[in-house]
Amino acid sequence: MARHPRAFFGGRSHIFLVPKPGKRYSSAMEVQVASLCDAAADYNGKLSLLGAFDTVLVQQFPAVHPHCSVALRIVFRDEDAGNHVLRLAMIDEDGKNLLPKIEAQLNIQLADNMFFSSNNLVFNLQGLQFPAAGQYSIDISMDNNMIARIPLQVLKVDAAQQPPGQAPPPPPPPPEPEF
Image (cartoon, rainbow, N blue to C red; front, side):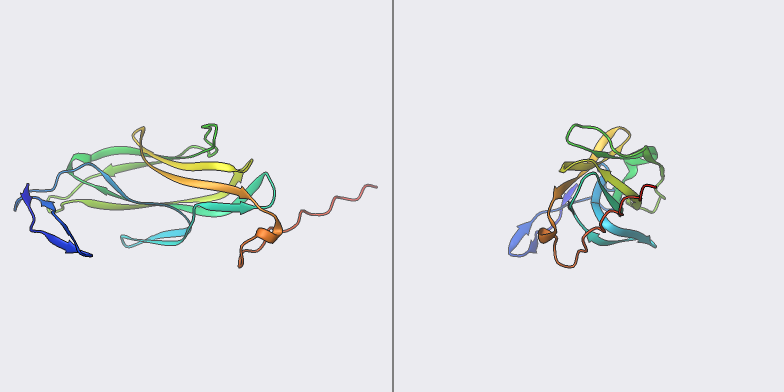
């Protein structure tokens, strides 16, 4: 590896290692983005995110979050070529996975003229259930090795604490009349 000339960013100098001409950069897989958000999409290789968050406010438990997405952008290099299994889990404070089995089979191949391959993955989650207030995490693993953890806290609030612009959940339906 050759040293790149000093680059200046915000008054600080940084030295970068760059490959010698004609050589590929060799490094392990890199997670560039791991986010829990309202929605995400891959548009021709561009990852678009809407409403990244790490806190869910609810008025009662058990609670259900109707829809969210986990957005990932992972860079693969030469040494990552081959088949991989990516798994998602939502872990509660007791270490229990609250999601059904969610996994993706990936076959990573780099063309001879590519230095790396950026892959966007979007997982849409419907009806996330939270039995109690607490700390949760979205754990992402590749081939049984954790590659990212997204923290999530679920907090109980009363109606007065509901943030502006966020509608409170609808009241429960009235009980059925008995005849």
